[in-house]
Image (cartoon, rainbow, N blue to C red; front, side, top):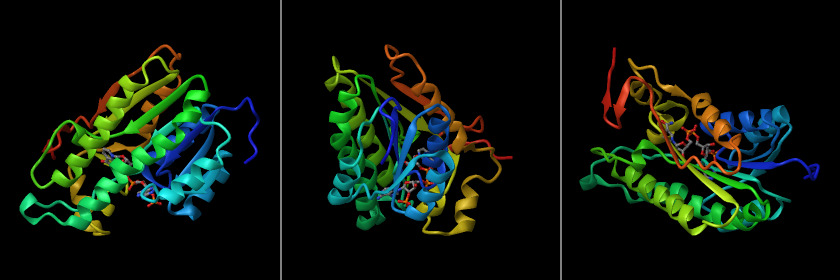
Length: 247
Ligand code: NAP
């Protein structure tokens, strides 16, 4: 990876679609060399070509993959923990253990793996920033959503705990908690069922990935003494995880 020593480096996990892809484009436009990671390397390579960044295969659920990804990074100024998602929508009585494992491995342990591995480089940058994309599911729970809401609560607690543990270190931490954003999120949640995924956004104007990316870009462009701790953003048509105005 050839990057001029003066160029700040931003790492975006889960950048092969949705919020991560839009965030990578925004940070690149702000002057960062963006390293994009996810499992679908073909998509990442196209994106990296367009933004002058670097594409690297990354599976946040795999120790060796995270180790290989983080080892080649010369410096890291910004880490966006974005890789994640939901699987299924089932009451606790019908909980699917594989779905729960996927959600906890990806959102919680994935964020832990990548953050832990990159912390030394973020501190060494002298002005590091960790942005974690949690969700309004990190603040609320809703019927049939406990696998996802519990994972997002846990991911948020990991992130919020670091805010205290890193006091005195040159690293800022921002949690961004979106409501409904139209991405591949619902398609993944419902195993590729397009009709079911489309119903989630029926009759509302959801957020788009760029709305969240704009917030990340704002956070990353604040002066280094300003720590934006938590930002919650929702569509106007959404009041909570389960309350929507549908036309
Ligand atoms: P998305 O379009 O499905 O994007 C998810 C990204 O995560 C993809 O790039 C996917 O890439 C990556 N990913 C999944 N498993 C991974 C793994 N094991 N290793 C590395 N990357 C992995 O959904 P999105 O809406 O942009 O979601 C981004 C984040 O926002 C997630 O954390 C999600 O929970 C959160 N969020 C979404 C919404 C919403 O309504 N959309 C609301 C609140 C929060 P690969 O499949 O190529 O690996």
